[in-house]
Image (cartoon, rainbow, N blue to C red; front, top):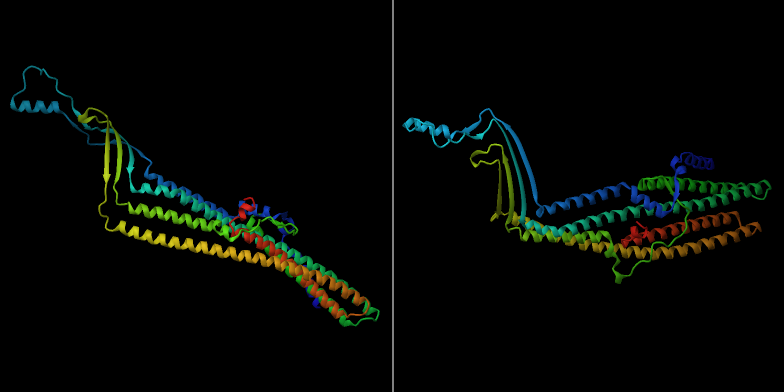
Length: 449
């Protein structure tokens, strides 16, 4: 009954396998990292944030770039206004009896239109800041952009590290599956031999039941590994945006050798460099605050058009203006802003030191884990070789009638555990290599991205 239940579970997992597991194409780890670099939504969001920072830094150039504005309007009024100087002179002369009998020798001026019934107005103005304390912020543009770039690189490193872990984890599950398949084949052979011996009267039913139990256990492990495989495959697809699966496991040493303490490789981590650049930006901001008491000087050129010539007798005019704005006291706003930026600078300096210390700790841990993984793999492979030789010896002894079926079952279990440990150790070593590259900030570069 137990065997039937496990067999049904294995068949159920096989029937419930997602369609993409069969349609997924086989890719190498580097191809998977390339897909993640192109299609991962988290990386797309990080790139958008970097672009936004680059666009925001362009605002600083407003301190030195000129401003040009043009305005125009058409006005219709029901109350036009004009000044008739000739009529006014005639009126005054008539009151005092000064009007000559003959036409005047001097022609009287025509009426002057102040506001016509229909008027057109236009203004062109150019403003140029000659000096303002904000000019000092221009030196913060490059560090701000570099900080954003390093932030994007850090996001890429973390995404690629996650993809590599899932990919290599899938390869480890595949190796465990192969070991479980071998254990299943051995268990089936043991079961078949036990049934044949029981039919010949050379074994009891307990030996058959023990062999059937081992077969059921092997199939149970296979079903569990199949479930893990589907879960990791779905996760890999979500990270890369494509239905893919890893190629057969083949140990590679493509991630370079770790650096030593003298080279301080943890200083190359994008997170550390981003924190350093953010500190530089805040230093520039604080320096600008120290000079924010200085005045601002602006030069302006203004040209206008008025369809009503008026007293000037021309429709076009222009003005040049040199203006100075000096805020002597701003109710303590400048002082408060300076103190606030000083506190922010201290916080960023502390964050930069913490990022550097964390990066160093990660590097030390990654290097230690890499060395431990190498030692664990050597030990696991030697144990697997020993278990394989021991299994062959016990099989020979069992065939000669020297050992029992219980000893044969025990050595089969030990061999499976040794092979599983070796498979896990191989996968862990590859993961540790990738983590070592990420701890030195060179994962994307080593992957060719």
